[in-house]
Length: 381
Image 1 (cartoon, rainbow, N blue to C red):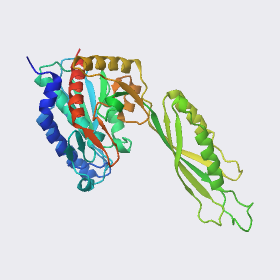
Image 2 (image 1 turned 90 degrees about the vertical axis):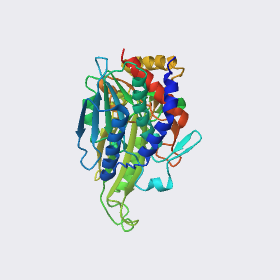
Image 3 (image 1 turned 180 degrees about the vertical axis):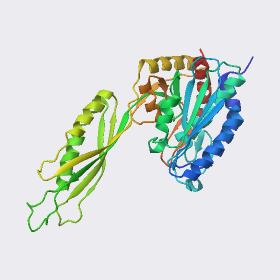
Image 4 (image 1 turned 45 degrees about the vertical axis):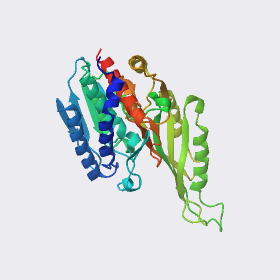
């Protein structure tokens, strides 16, 4: 009797952990071009070793940021499946010295191990064990990006182009609570409000000038009043500044705004709020800049179908697969508006993204690798 996918994943675990160690020990902060080049070069060797040569390979130069590498592998279905992973992390060079890679029982620690280096290792081994089991697989587009943690300015158009003609998108960000896949994510807007006032001596004539700080305070209240938590919309002015001296009526003030929304309708409403921001004082002015960094990843009918397929595939290997909607965004947000079914959160099981207690679970690596292999086989039809 041939081994099951979970058995194959467990047998591969020592090699998976070795791969993960090597990957984590190549530090890859988003803002360090040289480090990202080293990391991608290391990944090239790992992917070739685990999967063999790709049918085709292409690269988009990241400039000062990380390059995007697209590797394509042949399969038995008509439409390819896009596998998406980023290799950049939030951790600066040198973090490894005080936060080394370690395995302690079921817990794996190290910078980027949860977000999202374990996810890519699992994806590679899922493909490998599925091949070793003789399972049919769809054509694969494996896209590695190096700027996700800073908003994907280089890789967004690459991701959108790679999605053309794909039947589904699988994203290897960390799993949700209870190892659930993520079938919906909020859209994210990053905005800035600048207020221009008129400076004056605050002591000699308190009525002169126009206080930009006063106007900003009113704007902040207006923005926070625009949130609608029941509709899934949060608005937070998280950073403010302004003025020059305590005895000077402020001539300028500013605030930085984070907006999260769960629907395109809420995007339109928030845009109306932003367009309507205005100063009360006739000599002051309000300016808003910024953009929607990531569109909403809504749970579309195609994503619902993909989740049903994945849940059935998971059941076939003894895994119960739940789904969850989350407030955080990822590169998965770029895929759903293009009409693909999307599953995110196929990566590490653990906790602590962007935090010192970041960790992945050894047992989660086995589960997620077997699950991914089963889902990919199901997508071959």
